[in-house]
Image (cartoon, rainbow, N blue to C red; front, side, top):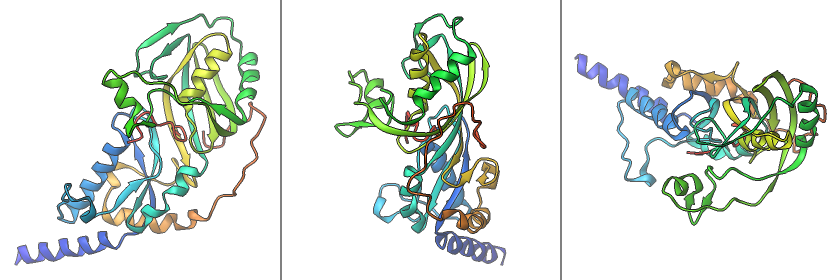
Length: 293
């Protein structure tokens, strides 16, 4: 009797899981890749519904799930997830605006442009003032050209550049490409550390920004901490599900609660030119995806 009741409950959970369609946001903690986090979410949902996934048959996946823009493994924050038919909506997340708060460190450059890499250069930074820093930020606001990091998920011959580098292959930098920065502000200046908020469009790398700022200040710099605080209309403070809430019922509720957020963003946002403006929420880096897994 107890077994049949349990089976019926699992069947109801499975039916509800299969009925889920839409977008919601989860919290990605520092450490795992975005792919790792997504797999953990998927495993928890399938286990709750007493279902098993056949990983060898991609076309017969019993749960369709994906994310709308990777965060570095060393970064944390908002990760938008599509489930069921919602996976077809993830493209809007890649193209939409994103907000990040990053802590950078002056005086040291690394090969990955963040704290996970090997220090490749050290330079003085005691000549840099807050006023000079804010003035230099103006150069990085608006429509600019940016060279993506070597350690990235961009591909060469079908292989991610980061993977090729880890295997010892020589990799050439990708050419500079146009990106957009809507807001950029210095919120703390305590050398060698500084904190900036950035709102940007798709394809933007915060690691490249921090590296470029260091060079512009006749020094060098790398990212120490990175948090994505907003992706599209999904914010860190209001919409993300923490890992202890990764259940079928909470995902269903979140999809419903967030449905009103999915109206299209304006096709064009005018970049601000005041670097002292503090972003209201604080992308990985909008696409700062060393792994983009």
